[in-house]
Image (cartoon, helix red, strand yellow):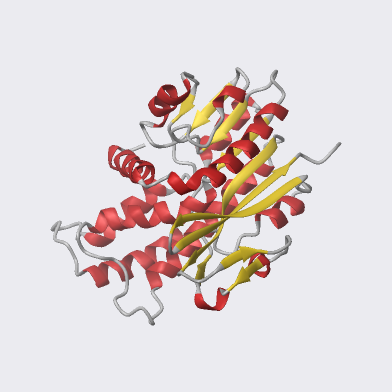
Length: 303
């Protein structure tokens, strides 16, 4: 992984950890409980892989079998886990999308003229990048290679899928520097936003296809949706699509989908994996920003 990308991911993780976590207690308890259940259910004779292991804030490493490997692209994630859990686990520092390097390179080509190095007008550069992104094919080759080499019995994913789009946006913004790549008029459709959403969906599809084809038991936690605004919000009984589960003044909220239309449960079932554990809850990250978190566990099909 390139140094600029590693630096960006480190800054993202540092900003996350710097937020006020006083009100996160119930959310963290549920994440740790779910991931801990997955670690305790894992076959200790087979390798275990924790994707998005981060600083160990959400992962109960005390329950992890001896042959557990952490995976997080943040170059300080392993050190923070050691400090928090006194656990020096094997670690992989790779991009799980397999496409951020190419995306960053395309953004830099769009921003600067190759023959002069002079920066283009930001909106011109954004349109050029929007035209390049559809040709990019994120491929989690590093993850697939690791799985083929180690054949893990259990894989946990700690809120990585909901971050693919956000990190892709940060990569693009990093290439544009102080200039904004986004359309000025909010009511106008933004070709670059649409191109990045399609890129995110391709990355998510390839990632989940790799996981479902691994033969491992899967324990997946991810942001199912994000609601912005001060209105009331609650969850009714489990329902699909996930928006049908929302209760409260939803009409006064702006609701976004970090998974760009991907229904993880439906994808698991299509791969022959009926989730045997499923849960959703609301995580109040900030007063006007609440995340609907989804947790799904599935085993490979018998036989």
